[in-house]
Image (cartoon, rainbow, N blue to C red):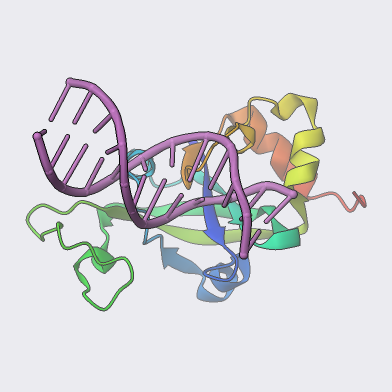
Length: 156
DNA sequence: GCCAACGTTGGC
DNA sequence: GCCAACGTTGGC
């Protein structure tokens, strides 16, 4: 089993949206490296759900699970979508998406500031300078630690 | 809204 | 294949 982190802007698609939807196609990834990571996902892989660019809520907010491997991202063919890609064709799709299902929303989000405070997370991908990847692998140790941080009631 | 740190595009 | 210009991400 592999572990991942996937980012979404809370205004765009939040952990609450995923909870009410139960599962979602993770569309809109338009970065080759992120796409390649999605292509290597398998059913059962675990995902940290990260809210980016959302002010005080920036951080890991919950956990999801991959329940469907990559398929061509339908939004690349949709001329009305903001993710439409004129260079993509049905025969040669450029972008792919997995299906992820809701597992849990953290009692308390693990904010960026909190992540940075933890010495064990110095090499955590999200904390690397200039990291803009919206999909990235996470080590099992980091994944477990963040789940633990997310299930405490401690005030940070 | 600013801006650093990227990634992508396209002319050559 | 180089690289300048441009676009995007995302923390602040």
